[in-house]
Amino acid sequence: MKKLHTFTLADRAEAGLMKELLEREGVVCLIRNEQLFAALGEIPFLECSPELWVVDDEVWPRARQLLDQWLKSEEPTPSWTCPVCGEILEGQFGACWQCGKARDA
Ligand SMILES: [Zn+2]
Image 1 (cartoon, protein in one colour):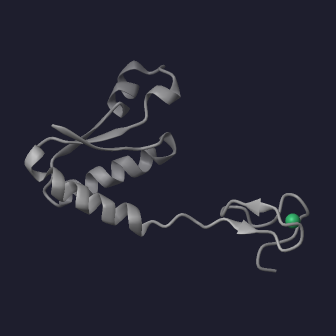
Image 2 (spheres, helix red, strand yellow; image 1 turned 180 degrees about the vertical axis):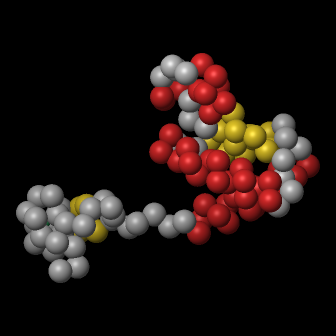
């Protein structure tokens, strides 16, 4: 058994999705820590980032390749710079929190 990827807690849902996609490709895998989390209930969040493990080492390189493809296809929203005040804002913000200028307005 070999670890394929460690997801951040924010990506917990993604971990489940990737497992499902890999299994659809015939790669048997499991998520560790998330199960632990479910079993123990109250362990600190930082200690339970879900890890995706491939059960059969022989298919690991293929799983790696598939996962890389999928992760790459999900481009994060790029950050942007406010044209008015020059503040750098993360992609999810639709307006500048500094001066209130709307993005792409
Ligand atoms: Zn601004």
